[in-house]
Amino acid sequence: MDQVKIGRFIADRRKANHMTQMQLAEKLNITDRAVSKWETGKSLPDVAVMPELCRLLNITINDLFNGEVVVMENYKEKSEQLLIEMARQKEEADKRLLSLEILIGVLASMILFGAVCAASFLSMPAWARVCLIIAGAVPFAVGIGYCLKIEQTAGYYECAECGHQYVPPFRSVLWSMHMGRTRRMKCPKCGKTSWNKKVLTKS
Image 1: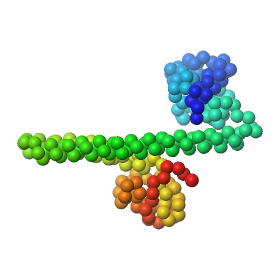
Image 2: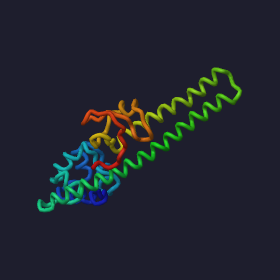
Image 3: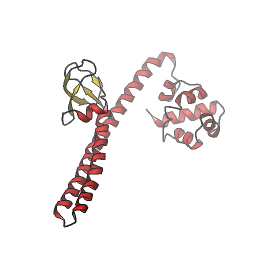
């Protein structure tokens, strides 16, 4: 989606409906700064305000996402293009998240390793060793939990038995055996347990 194009479209439709940024913001119960950010292409409207925004501007959600009024002859084509673009953006965002997962995992492991090494080799009272290890274990646990949450939500898991692609519950990811990002889980469609591999694109 072209945020700048969408922003210009919002501004044009606002003016066509004889509203200032402040008036539009008041009707949506938001700040005029938020409207300004939309219109300059710095951000997109939240999903929660989109229906009311479209009603006020006399446009459809599809018009908003395309940054132009979509005529009926082009409606199907524009909708398909929009879906393809949204899928592409999700795939890119998932790739970034999975890269972030690796970084967080490495940093969390280094913190724990450093704390354990310091507690093992430096001279200190026993209570200080315990505190140091706990201080390393807490960020490690939080970091690994965050990594698992990223792995659960970014992309999909593909069942080795039926090919169904799905996003599993966090509990399944947490307790499943795994080799890298391939996890042994029960498919919600066929009910069989197999090694489900991580995929970014849903086919």
